Image: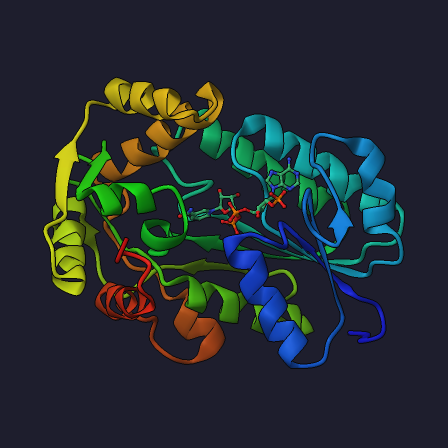
Length: 282
Ligand SMILES: NC(=O)c1ccc[n+]([C@@H]2O[C@H](COP(=O)([O-])OP(=O)(O)OC[C@H]3O[C@@H](n4cnc5c(N)ncnc54)[C@H](OP(=O)(O)O)[C@@H]3O)[C@@H](O)[C@H]2O)c1
């Protein structure tokens, strides 16, 4: 790959994008961070921001927006950018996309986006990931942890939560090596944990109780909407949790080992490290 053109990071300020950008910058590779508040002003829903974002770009990392409307916009952007010269895309997707038992709009739109990006003609690598452990420290589960109550609708189901630092390393390795073109990697952490087990791990790491409160799926949507989450996104979250609730996420995947040649980090190490940053001290 050429190192003179910047690598476009779509969702550059986000949880995966900023990790990828940090790795690339550390290697002295130029990046173009694109989001509403980034150096390259970019909005998935404002197409007037798209041409400048894609101009002169050969390679992009795509962290798509959540939800069907956003996924459609992401597909349209990649199609347009490919027509303007975009050649190589590494795309984040959800673990289980394209697998049976996930007949929810959020999974179908994600699968449709995978197909749209493939059909755009770019050299594509898809990286499907399980749920991020850092959701509990860098995203909307943080407030639940601070309140001591994880109010979610996972029932007794488990997930193999992945450390985002592993995702960032995998994405970077894949971006920098064309041997990954055409591959789909599936990432997860090394063990399946239910939400009560997550609550116990967090309690130990933080040193104060964190409990799991199991919500009915519609109750979960109502609480998210009351919190300010748009209805479409709240329903997408409900459906993602339905997959956990239905015990369909209780398996580990070996993508980290395949790409990095080492095992993924455990949730316990994540929780210990995050606790040391003071993020849960408030
Ligand atoms: N959470 C999980 O456990 C998980 C697991 C597997 C896959 N995923 C997938 O991960 C993707 C999200 O990636 P991420 O977690 O790295 O991102 P993220 O942290 O959710 O956010 C990415 C960035 O998108 C920007 N953004 C928000 N609205 C925007 C808009 N209208 N136009 C342009 N940029 C906008 C924001 O920056 P600005 O405010 O500056 O715009 C934000 O920093 C989703 O597709 C999700 O399905 C998530």
